[in-house]
Image (spheres, helix red, strand yellow):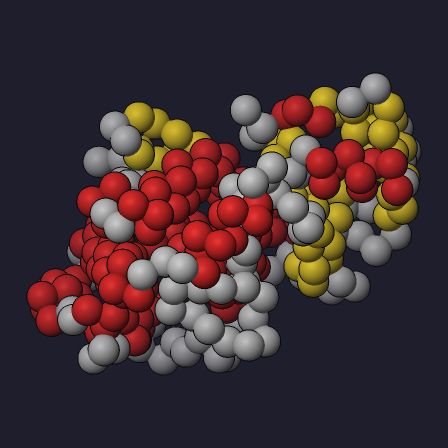
Length: 290
């Protein structure tokens, strides 16, 4: 099982040798490709060989490229993630509307529930209001309880003056963490043979990750909690590494402790099964350690 998240932060040359990623910088480091789940190229002073890129794609290793400000800018996605991709895409395009609506409702419900649990963990009385929103949820969340819950939730966590549009270290950390999480979900969707552009609820024509945006929703509070613990007064290399390492922390899913990276795989598989079999009871969400 791949588990390493490799971050290249300075000038280096990366190439492939005998199934190893070879990093040539001030010193030479070798990492077995079978251990790598994600490779993040944080510096623009990095060169890679075509042979390495091809092998990373064939092994379904997510590669994320950052810009000059070291923020995620693009990622590498293979044309085909599974031997039966064409069949999977046909199924995806023919999922029943009612099953998609029920699945999205389950996802939104779980997201608000996780937000409520985080507020309870820090003794915020606003958690009771999120309980009310859970009771008011309609199919497909037509009354936008998700949006109302988000406003209450973020103001409780980060202060009454907090907005998600302000230019602050907290928002920079949240955005970075969500991007890393989104990338992990898009990797799993493509690796399973589906396409990320066609979502359940998100349908922005300019968003090529609509489906990943849908599925990641219950995992957002994991990023929120991490940012709350970091409490960043700045957002630089150390803070980024802490957020990247979030994928190596543990949650419980299917009554077993799993790294978040692997929990994403199990959760996505359960959602695919629910949609293919018209049975939302198959969806498996993670839970936090008590």
